[in-house]
Length: 282
Image (cartoon, rainbow, N blue to C red; front, side, top):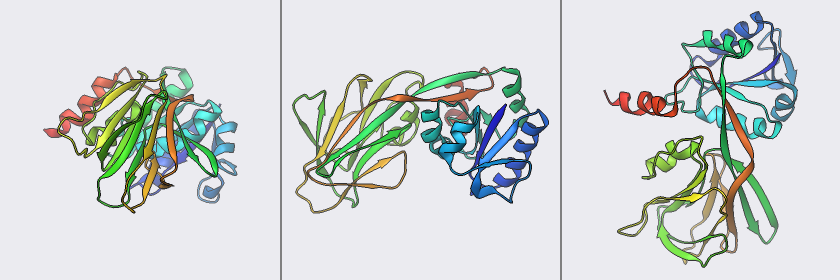
């Protein structure tokens, strides 16, 4: 079995845990693969030139870090059709299948004693005078201003009439992303294995403006129609901001790609919500 290991070495003690993970995998007979940038740092590893090649060459991927590491890994794993096991070194780790003190569970990869959760992704396309550019999102796509101002946005569903609203911005999230930025902005918690698109306005200038769930088969189109001279940006899964001009539109729909996450125990989503959110209040 070929297992790729993608660590976020910016995390505290990530190097130590990565070495432990490599040892467990190798002891169980796996050929371990890593990105070329780690050459000279880890031994008995096959190195690949980039993350796309890494995903294509392996049978599955172990992402070592937090949800952000898993989301970054999903960009390539979803295209290659490879499942991800997330090892959580962060705080919440909603997408992780193993906590840092549960590395013994890695042996399940060799016995097949695990299940795979298939999570919906978004296809996000920016339509501009220069052409169309499409991105994939596992968590969310956020349109917001660069400054703390209220902006005017247009919003339509499957080519319906344009609805206008004022807000600091808006979030279009997957069910997996419902526990991220959308939740902080007042959105609902949604089972990540369901399929829908969650629309959540950010600080809307209205008395009654709530988060809304749309069928995953719908295409949602967003435009900015503000008189302000401030810049508006699109952010995909917390990545680098993409400038959105006044003449641009952003369309969001269900992607044909899915992220597959490995889970090594019988916990369901509601157990995870309880352990990550509810118990943390005690």
